[in-house]
Image 1 (cartoon, helix red, strand yellow):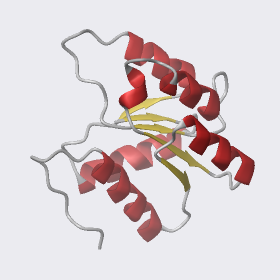
Image 2 (tube, rainbow, N blue to C red):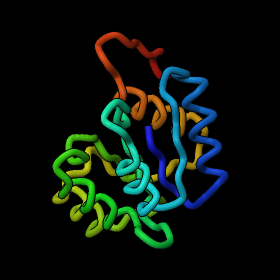
Image 3 (cartoon, rainbow, N blue to C red):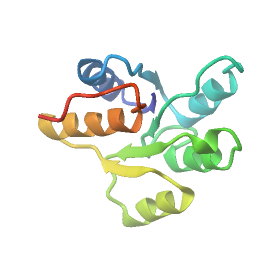
Image 4 (cartoon, helix red, strand yellow):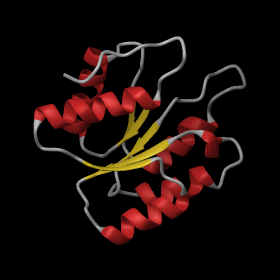
Length: 137
């Protein structure tokens, strides 16, 4: 899973919680959308593409919506599910993300239990038939 967010604390929290919930899913953290595109462009033919890309909406440089637009407009990357994960509740941004093809638009929760539910959602989007994940408590 690729997670792009300029907040280092959020990166660490998501990485740590995913490891606790499903250590099979490796979380690669990047600071902005340009880094996401650079990372994907740097993969070789033998590398696996991420099971999921999670984007913060407001990042310096290439923000979440612009990154989503680039991903969904790319022949290879368009098949990777993308989730917008942000503090924004802006209805217009949500609708634009849906038009672009976002899988989910999730507002960052404040409570730990709600965050665990979000991480379970991320893990389920990375689910393959050979993997099983514990249910959200």
